Image (cartoon, rainbow, N blue to C red; front, side):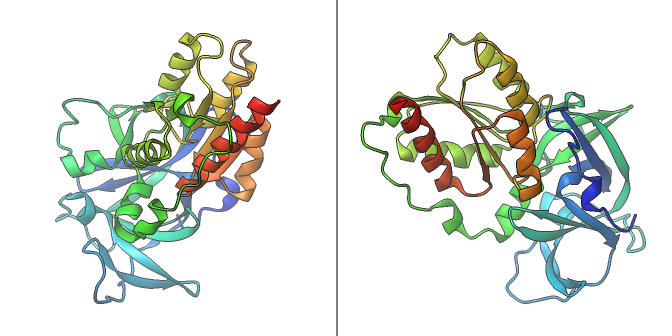
Length: 311
């Protein structure tokens, strides 16, 4: 496997609740990543080691004229790779949140096209046998692939902990528009990443939103919305990539629901690019925000709710 082109991406039709997963190995663990985040896969090459880098970063390497940080994913997740050879190792070059990062893995298998319903949320208790706590903390779901369990790795949280500047998460939050009381708005958040759920919770709480309910996947959020009274929920803030039901399919369900069809939906995802933005529009999202623009989440919610109150 040499290159994964943009045309190979997931969700060729918006709202189908499908994705493509690139399966790879880390030690004895079988893992996966959404192909939509993968630019290409190349053979391992020695990086240039640079002083002062994060311990998980092997160094920098140049690919087609671009210098990219190379992250040793096994080292970062505390996974033993003593049996891995340089011949088998691969570099997964990703692109999300407006930047490219490379992740070294022990080997790459193949791409599987499947439904988000095949991916279950991470177990709340007990974990998975043979998988350490650090690896589980970076896992956003578990894919059942035949007899094997494939850990869906949250590359975003790994990259966040290594290369993100903290100021990205501490941007100033503007005051609400006149007449808008954030504390009275009830917001449902659907986000599978524990790391990002925590950040969203902090930002929304700091902004004064007092009624926020967070769910780990689209199905759990849908169950909550479907059980709500008409007008009980004011807005849904949802990721796109989620186990069981993704954000696009969740939005499509809402628009087809007699009770929920008018519910404002804001998609907040690293997959919000110019090309993918059309898919959010097709399913009826009110707004789409690219991660990690956390402060913009607040301003967009303010704008939507202020306009609804004035209508």
